[in-house]
Image 1 (tube, rainbow, N blue to C red):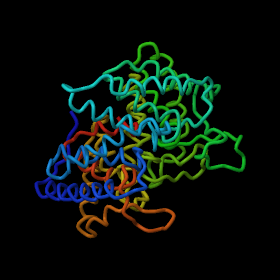
Image 2: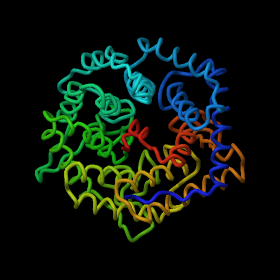
Image 3: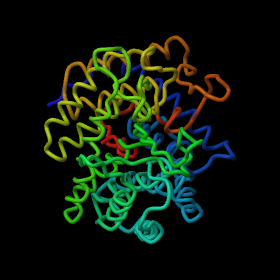
Image 4: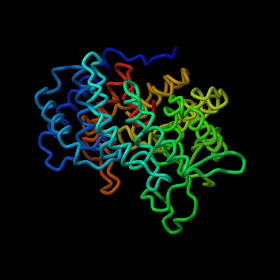
Length: 407
């Protein structure tokens, strides 16, 4: 049984205040932003997810009529969307399925059957020809498949995901497995030599994300052995490619394999803590305690890092302080340890102090282009994700983080 955060009554009140303000800001945004896209990570779908969670916490914080109007708009426009998780159908349909499952007595099993069929037809390639990571690529269909699989058979979509990752995998002589960034990937760091293998180490765009996408496929009996082979080979590769040292203040992992002096931020997108989380989940799914032990060591090292060594510069889920509180909360569920509770508490306290010092501006997102902190309403980088994170810390429900391949 994992220990939970000790949130004081004053902190609960502060968190509730922040969530209410964020709900007001996001509601205003979905009502007034004529340029708002429908996507999960930065658009309408992710903001509706937060408003739904905020309504569950405090019905008075959300305008039901506005929510219903925008949800209906999202559903009406599904046929006009691209397919990927970030801005496309995979992310939007995940949100609709999440909302559909929230009231199991009224669950509509037919709501997304057309989307199931569309994905099965449109993604049926062998070998897989495009992006393989989760934001724009093949791994990004796993959250939808995994969420849908709770109520409807998703073995066909999982077959496409497993087959696609089999077809793009690099197999090493020692049995290890990894995935090189495709030559035409927009996420390649090395664009001078696009044929040179490049093994990305981020959950968002790299090998940990492929492992995380394959873990739920192991629950499909016909795919269990194939998915398990890929997961175990990739975990062995990941452990062999730990180039940092746990006794230093530096990262255990960099952004790509082979870096002689690895540095990476502490966050969801890149960094040691989500690598540790994926190793722990894989170890439990495969019944490989050695993976879980390694994950614990890496995560304990990450728990010692602060805002400076972790390169923390804003609040969001992707690589911010609220995101870290949630990630350590999740890590503690898979590998319980008082140090992870302490880390989650540290980052929650850090978040509340940022609000005390700066008000809502403390929840701003850092814009890498303008080099300024700015209001961002999105799920991955902005207010909607910060709000979901704070609610998850309050109610200890982080099941929604499956859309980011964390549970």
